[in-house]
Image: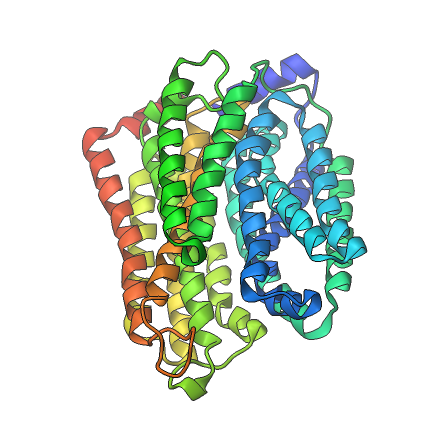
Length: 482
């Protein structure tokens, strides 16, 4: 499928397949883009205490920084990958780069809490640019372009997590808030220049249009769902109302999109073998990662004086979770290769099994640093394998003029899944506090939290089993026809 589409695109644009040196440069700048955009999601968390003291705000106000980023990401993952299909790659890269650079510069220059919120929302929106290589690598590389694009995305996720976690922790220790954002702006600007220098001109991949009403509707219900889950521990029952409204609006949106002449996403894609399963898995793996990081962060940074915890700082927690990021390099490439061989169910099941194993281990072994190193390595290994399958499957069943759309669907549900996993375990940790230590969860709640998180990959196993039973051999047959 990819080779035929590459030939069509070449005929239409007059482009030629890039030489090996150009191929290397394209892959390098793609890896750079994925790294810096993924790092955003892991950098601001460790900076929250610094933000509180710098702007003299409370914990609730500080967490709104992450909520603003989350809401921006929800809108970005809806729009940016889909727009890539109807706008040429270089324009999307330029617009995204400008947005990210501005998002970092605004809080650096203005140095106010409101500027920080605005900048965080822009950074969240622009972080969806990590999906763009799935489109432009397919269009500008010959041969196994899908395999390369998915591998770059998944493997550089590990780099981005490392850079984000360690960079955020180091920033807390050694940098001022303004200096951090200036450095971030310089990194985004340099990345954008490199992308524009390397990615060749191209025509829009698709002549389709996106309905403005449908897009605004989708962003609205996704925002409601994300906002409800992000603030559930603070707003209480109001969040359940918002969540209900968001879910009803989402169902109505799906029904309307099926009849639309200009849909945001072509939902017919979900009827192809394993595609719906891949999107469900993306949601659940997002929930796994968010729940895992929340539980690890709270436990390791709890001061030992209360009777449990490791008493580390943000940098210490980041280093403890490094195996989670580093094992991504091991599983990403192998997982994508198995999907290419027509075995999507195998890799989704293997990833889910490893995640469940790592989370059950941590449920009963989380008192010492070495236990986290083992558990985070196993969870990271399974998580990356699962993501590889989740993003590769939609790419393999659509033509390249829908590459952005095929990236946007699993990416959007992944964001919702991450908010869901975080919300569930936030509720769990708030069920009971240590006497005399307000806000410090009872230690047994971590066991409960990890076991609940382990239910998410079990659900992936169930979805994969159902899909395999309903479509035996269908995905491999589809691959053979491509």
